[in-house]
Length: 150
Image (tube, rainbow, N blue to C red; front, side, top):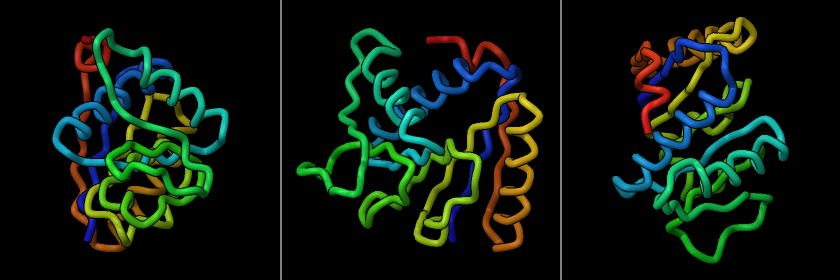
């Protein structure tokens, strides 16, 4: 059963949400976790792909967009709007607005919510669904310094 962590950001800024996601992805990568970042659209995937190259000077996180074709290297972060392939389901960053179908295959799911009413409403729905499945859920309400510090 997956462990789910919700990170609630203090602002409605999508840019701050994406920056915080990059920080958590970097932390997961440094701990040896080759995760999957689930997005809503190809455009969102490309934006995060670009941001992972530029969000912090000196940071290197091997990553690529997943379009249904497995990468040649296994030790890479995948980003995409498709469900994660086998091997990348262990840690799932859900930056999409829907409940991840791969949740039953994941050990850890990270949800990052900004302070936008639409985002919070879909997050509450996913929270209830995780809870109904009996998953362990932790909520982290962050302050602005956790989001903006580099």
